[in-house]
Image (tube, rainbow, N blue to C red; front, side, top):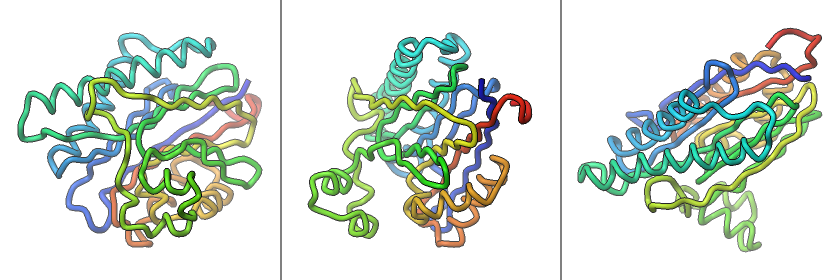
Length: 252
């Protein structure tokens, strides 16, 4: 059975006055979430905070099963729906934040060398294995839909002026569709969750290069945020890094 260690960092970036990202890492390091809010300085920060608080409450009230894959999938659906409800209701009741929303990417770690990813929006999850990056999530954005349709290249997408327009988020509809990705893990794998502030500046290969050169999750998070800031960081940036190892190579 694998062991794992995790860390998280967030920063407002170089051009934003306020950090509208939020993250959650459960005390048992089984549930992780990154949320990137939108809807103005007040609304964005509130939306992402409400989302991660809903996920935290779900962990406290009803923690996910440790081995049942279907149970973990259902837990993610329930948690993200609770997060969506929290943002939707607040936006309906408070005219000052009407129209706010947030992305979310959630990861639930199982005992059985397995992690389940759920996401809405353009916050991302990566698997870094054998020195290669694998993007696990598909951005719910106008630009990425054009990439998938063959109308834009990835390079064109990086500089497209509409790259921040997302097609799905929490808080804009009463019901939300959640994409889920199961990931079977091996020793020396890394999972990285992030808001779009990271890949806006760093290419997937650069993210992978940082992970390959660092040994601990907190150092990986620090270096990824530093390199994003060094690159101008036009947006908030949040990173969660999870490192996997054989159980005889250190404790969780």
